[in-house]
Length: 185
Ligand SMILES: [Zn+2]
Image (cartoon, rainbow, N blue to C red; front, side, top):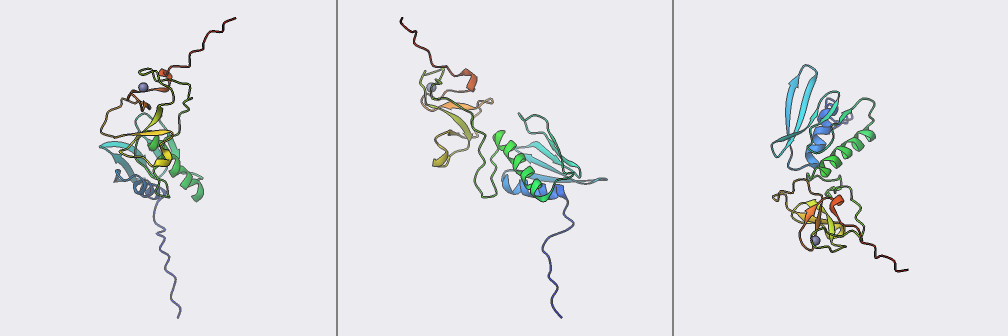
């Protein structure tokens, strides 16, 4: 008699558990708490003692600070759609300065903010020195063109960009625009 192929796939795993496991794996500092409810298991994703996500039978709810409120439903999501959904949740976490990784174990970066080379730092008035803040102690060389690392231990009060010359941190809207030299007619 031939051996029956034992599928390693656990058919009893719920969507919320699948998503919780995947997020937990790609978000190393996160912890997952499981609560039992009448409507099945509820998974809570926490990090740095903050509740960030609640995953239940129906979908996901956001509690990510600085991200707008969002609810996601699993309904009609295919397995391909589900991995995209997990990616987009992780991107939102990256955007909120959490250290998360892609399926290729590369750190997900925030969406770039466009800074023209003519925009100048409001502090030292230099241009070309302002970069997007990346929360972490170090950065891969390939990303150092656009991003500059700032350790998580440093409080930034939401600042998004940093001048690598003088250390100023702030927002894009605070940058000085190029001053036009008046035309002499
Ligand atoms: Zn500066």
